[in-house]
Image (cartoon, rainbow, N blue to C red; front, side, top):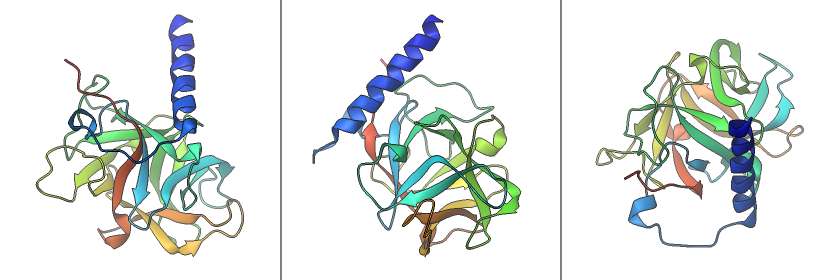
Length: 212
């Protein structure tokens, strides 16, 4: 019960801090890398943010939809960085090396960014990307650093996220926009090969210094 209460308080404090908003700032060295337990927004190269909320797909798996949100200041854009299923556990603030396997839990609905073979996305018919409340290796994503000088997942530095089980690249297709549920948001799907549509950067969020 105490651990559950502590978890509720922790998430409440995070949501309060994120709702306050952030102004322009210089990233201090100790907070320049994404780490275990970071709570982040992932920005697509076009500027929209990876997003989910309690709306399900009307096709495919029927799981919770994942989109890319062009609007600013939405707490449904936040994802909690966790170690991959089957990977060694890590401490809060432990920096994430390039090529690591991670899971991203949608902060508000507590569902993991997920993909699976056999279900197509609504517009492009690529592999569906969803948010899933179970736990399996379909939640695992490999962090590929685009800048070969990067040794760790670094804020504002481009990455690709590759689905571990199927090898698909997390992508957003800005020419495919939902008219309803949710209107104006961009389709997110899994692409079969790397392209210019699968570049993401860690932006707004809560970051932790490395443990001593």
